Length: 397
Image 1 (cartoon, one colour):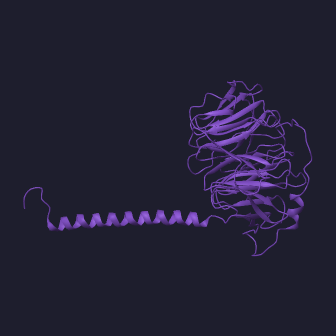
Image 2 (cartoon, helix red, strand yellow; image 1 turned 135 degrees about the vertical axis):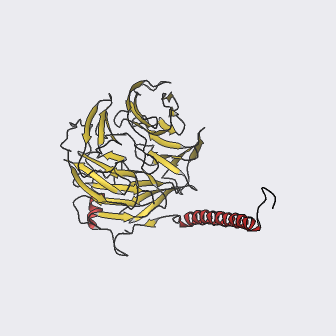
Image 3 (cartoon, rainbow, N blue to C red; image 1 turned 90 degrees about the vertical axis):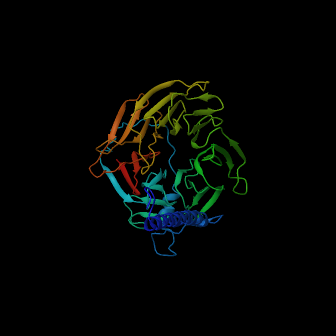
């Protein structure tokens, strides 16, 4: 045998390895193809979907208690400046509300009880009525979507209306009285964010993974948009409408860019922006959360070409791939404070003043995981947070 030549056995062994690699590659491609087809075929049908809780017996009707709370008229309120010690030092309750990682949360505005909603990675929407035996220990679970529920909000003008938006390309409205999830807007896939554009909440603005911003009028028949605007970006991560001057829409893009259409730019971000929100009462401040590990507060009292940066708070905002992104969210009862989850140990949720000063840290021995997604109640002293296993934690007075 010449030096460097291979024996018949070695040649056969190499050929077997090659054939195995080809076979394994074909299996991998087949798995990917099957997964893609499964996702496409699993998409919910167009039109209304029946509200049937999957954690209750088949054909169970919605509890009357839910309908009563859902239709409770929220008391009108002015911006009330509560003390942030707020006696919220202990957890008021913990519940497994959805199956998987929480992407979005919201409080129903009713004040007699605490009714909360959460959307998860699998397209589930859970409703939790604290201290109630409704459903499964106060929880009702639905599946109106098949991919992450990235954004949800109760209509400010019609609190019976919960809107949920999903990566699967659908935006749905929860009608408890009719017991259906109505379809409001539908594209192929990739919806990322939405906000109410008009004061009566009949018009919406959405953003998607492809850099498009759409205007949707719910009064128009069908599930299409009124207009579509393509931005010079790959992804729209967040859209938010000025609370007073509705002609101003803030758009957070995926590559360092942050702007208020059509007048202003918010400079200083060196990495992708997770979120950006106007202060709820006046819109005179904007808080942004950026993956460069900074939370920034801007002065937008005058919408000039360059909104001045007021302060920057250094925080560890890197959550990795298994946790939802941290987002600084204003307290809707105040115009000067916001809440954000934290990667620090012991685990906590923090509230900051617009000046950058830490106002309060909510901690509890039961809170052993990161609460990435947070929200304050619109009228009561209550705060909720959601984690990666589908649990909601609520602090209340």
